[in-house]
Image 1 (cartoon, one colour):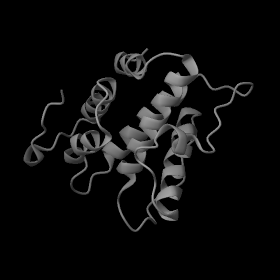
Image 2 (image 1 turned 45 degrees about the vertical axis):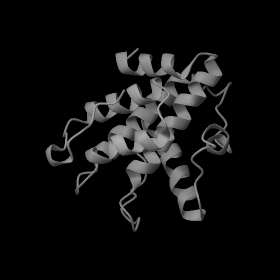
Image 3 (image 1 turned 30 degrees about the vertical axis):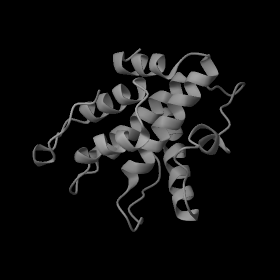
Image 4 (image 1 turned 60 degrees about the horizontal axis):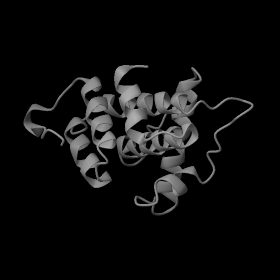
Length: 157
């Protein structure tokens, strides 16, 4: 399953957090376990892993094959594709929406607006949710399994 990460030697390589997430999702990992596997990457002041997760979500959006003529409807997507991990409260819903929108903007080559005004430095949580939602959306749209999408994202296809 997932290799344990020693928090005292926090990995600095954003590619490693991407690998951990994709391996966990491909294996059908429980989302609580996926969050716990990512947590050592985000301890301390560095927000690099959150950006790496947003970029992974952007890649998953690309894998979904959304176009102007065949758009991916974001409204209700997280509620539908992430029912086991609902956003509780308006703030959590807005942060999840920000992460999904940020991923789409990054995929389109635009920089999302600054989120430094957030009281809590929890962008990584919502970015991870966006990864899960967009990987599942890509699998659904393409009629393949989540593991196949994760494999493609791992290999860079």
